[in-house]
Length: 392
Image: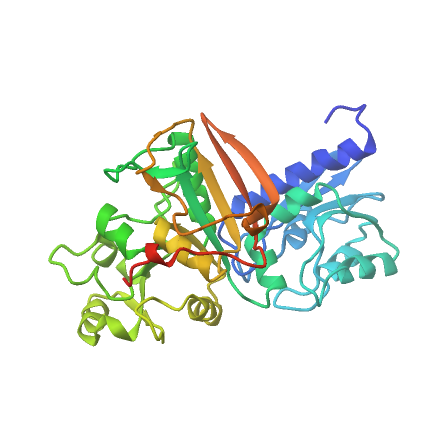
């Protein structure tokens, strides 16, 4: 770190390092947040740590253990999230910080749990420890999109939708060609988000057309398989001689087919005999009841679901206001064809006030492509063209 940096810049410098540590556990801490921590003495980093997995020691305790001695007078602990103040499986981090003799704590985001919000900071201050908050707060909060939503929504999963489209909003040509609209950098970024989310979802049409694998394939890491959801109200994907790879590959026990009682018990037995899980959710129609899917995920402690397609499935989730977050990848490409397949073909927006918008928006340039992502904000009235929805 340059010696002439201001205090604010020094705080940001060290917090960025703590964030880089936290990201080492990307997708591995659910239902806990990712957290990074460092200890600084006389402007130098002397110890660091991050929360590696659920049930393991918290980042602050890892950093203190890595130091291997009492901190020197005036030592500062940097941590990306407010230290916990309750005695869970690993004990309160506020106690460990106090007992170690840390005299200053610099934190990024506040714990979003309503039962804990600000309590850790208050506990530290009551112990005579200087507390500085809000350093790179937006970045620190963004790190834990899924955890933050779970805390604020009483355990409900974060359901996110992804689209990859042209500048004129198309996701496929009229001949249904879509590989590849976006370039390699954007596709690698999708793999990174796949690694974060505990579940990935597609519709029956996407499975039958593309036969996707739905795993996270990141260079230098072993292939990783989340829960793979297939929405198929009539079990069309099973009524075929050539079964999808999702039902036959080495990860088939990580596949969950979400269907209705209208799909047929024989097909349900066939899937279960192959080792594929089936969620048969009550529905008066031949389409899966999406609020019931959200409740089932919460019951099963699946904290986040990344919807990758297709347009019909995303539109159905929008119709039910069940999408919490959007990832919109845009390629510098124009089909200039009004018969190409649109990203959200079921929406009919006549007024600006009827638009579904994003808030807390983040942008990223990925090679020649561009990503806009943010939380969904729904209008009071959302018009849907029912004719685009099939019953499968």
